[in-house]
Image 1 (tube, rainbow, N blue to C red):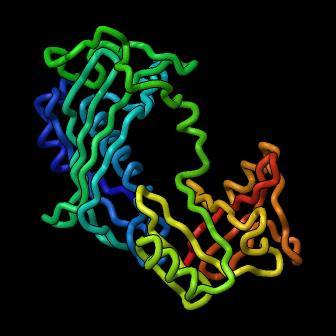
Image 2 (image 1 turned 120 degrees about the vertical axis):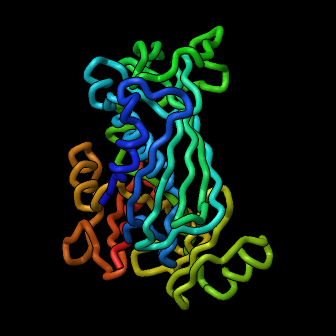
Amino acid sequence: MLRLDTSRLATRHKSARYAARVGSFGDITFRVRYRECDPMGVAHHSVFPIWFEMGRTELLRESGMSYRELESQGFFIAVVKLSMSIRSPARYDDVLRLRTTLVKHGRVKLDHEYALYRAEELLATGSTVLACLDRLGAVQPLPDNPGGADRACDTIPSSPLSEEIVMPVTATQQATSLIEGASPTVFITDMNRAVRFYTETLGLTLLYRAGDHFAMIDAGGGCHIGLHPPGRRTPTPGAPGGIQIGLTPTRSIEEVVRELEHRGVRFRTDEQGRTVIDDSAVKLAFFADPDGNVLYLCEITR
């Protein structure tokens, strides 16, 4: 549950509620939820951009305008560039404070910076570049003084967007996204041998191991590799299909399954006719892409 530090924000923006300038900032506080963590209880890297969105949404609201109001007028704000650096892990049930700062306001772009704290300890920093799009996903200028941003600090590029922005994601795509992360699962015959290969031979980091049942390898760049022994209904290790992709749903797995079924996706059922398999620690739902490659939704419940 998001808890907005309203007393702090209200004091900061009281004199410029409708005229927040470049350099204005706001804090939100919230608690790390279980579903945002990996099996070790550490907040997964994929949730940090979501927290950043929470921060800039509330900053805009406190400056006198909401994203809903912008969209009702035909202005859609899409993330076209994101970077972040995690210094220390956030863990389940930690109370965190996120400071969001508006650092630049251009003709079609807004730049924000983020600093995430646990008490006074800095855990992570990040930045985003947002672009203004119309209902069809085409670039358009920001409305005059959105949220009271400082036009005096405006830097207008010679073209609507710099060359680094090639194909922005539309606001519609952002709103309908059902997936917020993915990782491959490799089926192996010997867990000890597989762990040694990925850690000692390849030099990767073992994040988590549950005996011979499962192991998670950090491959860097935000990629985690799951190692799993084969089962009766899984591919033979080394055979075609011996690697499957696990997808993290943005909502409950049951909701996402229903939405994907509505979009024409056919899910596999187990011997009991269940689409969503509840394995006490995780919920799984298997399906395939048009070429038959196996994908599965995975929601950690333990």
